[in-house]
Length: 432
Ligand code: NDP
Image 1 (cartoon, protein in one colour):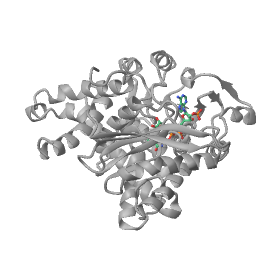
Image 2 (cartoon, helix red, strand yellow):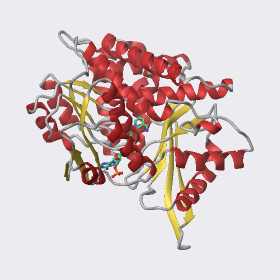
Image 3 (tube, protein in one colour):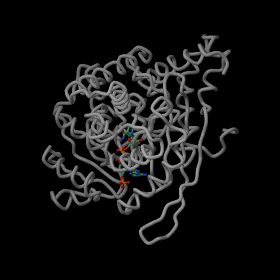
Image 4 (cartoon, helix red, strand yellow):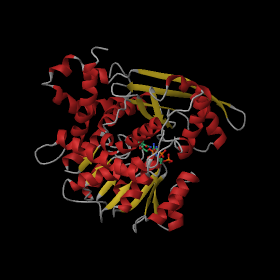
């Protein structure tokens, strides 16, 4: 706390990992002597830069750009870029730190990083977004590369933004390499990448339920968010027989008691991913309820926070418990506050933390990197099978390191399993 004053999200993420890893390393002198955990909490480097661009009215605008290169012990830095007004160093350090464990869990050779800017793409024209992305990349390109640091999308950064940034990188670096993931198919993108985080989150829930001889079929599901992760999480849940009754954005949530089906979801995709509209329009179109706030008071069996950090608080967790929710799987990064996690775990709700439950996204990014390196592309079926397999393996590792007397502690399992691979690589390099 003294070294990183005011970085509350970063403290929260480190505290959660330390609480599981410290007991594990207590009797393992090699980790303690080398102070591996402390070393892991310090990013390799942090880049902060000015991003100047011109809006459609000719006004000069200034934002702050970042890239936190957290840890490259097991592969090139890898992690998304976030464009949102709430972006600051604390948020990006928490995300980069979490990414270290998540990427390790996928078993693919990827280090960790995170970046972005306090730029708000909402309400901006395509040309304004383009000019911003080009200006952002004009600084960032010096610091990234296919074997150095491979950014991807996150909140506010989707196919449009990745395309503008890749175009600018290509122009500046005079090379065509897989320097970003989440690219469009025409220029090196991977099938299933767009869907991967949401699909992976649904698969992770399925794994947790199968482990208890249960399944998704017939379960009522509450999903928050209506961006990339939420939409494809809902799509896979519906395919697996779940009944998805909510989606949300920062204005509120829709509650469709009949369930969102594939046809309604196709309309939502057009609304959110093409037209960049608000989820409230769904309520008007399909005559269902719209409420301000978050959806956690809606009765459900399963909950999927897929919007942003700290969106599920202690009081929300109590509502989920009293409504009979049996499991929570996080599509977003750290959406559940520490106090809320405590409430869920005390009540015996199965809880899958984001670093395990949403790792499918970065896993398919890793597969996009492999395809780019080989200059070839795999089919959608092949990729979905690989994604499924990776999620199964992550679940298996969580069970191996998180099994307690009568239940699996997925937080413990994910943190310890993620830690070991990175820690052993760092030990092997000596004191650097
Ligand atoms: P998008 O930008 O596509 O969607 C974000 C959604 O969350 C929108 O519906 C947005 O609503 C809502 N949201 C964002 N900020 C807030 C807020 N402060 N309060 C309430 N609602 C909010 O982002 P993604 O779907 O890509 O990302 C969602 C989460 O998943 C993030 O935590 C991200 O880090 C995580 N994640 C994403 C991965 C990916 O592959 N994209 C991979 C792994 C994790 P509105 O439009 O009103 O802002």
